[in-house]
Image (cartoon, rainbow, N blue to C red):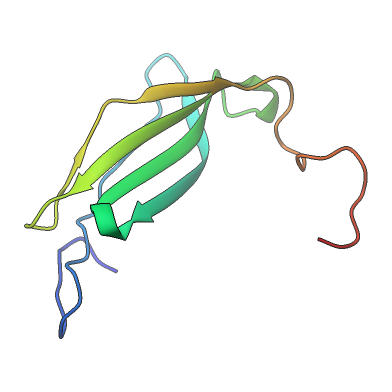
Length: 102
């Protein structure tokens, strides 16, 4: 993976690198991103926690950005959208008791 679009024998172009979430001057950060690519729609969905600081306890909101892969390999990205409030420390697993099997 590089910072240029590339094609090889029948494969789709690899998108150019695009920064989706950046630290804001006021100290707001974004952590734990997740990225989903919907190949049939040429659409990316990127998720992250918006935090007041880099501390896990400061997670406030789950945010999302949607991007559309263009023919030239660039990604046209929408504005950041708030998805859901995050309550408390989000550093642990999403369950209360230890789990030995999934």
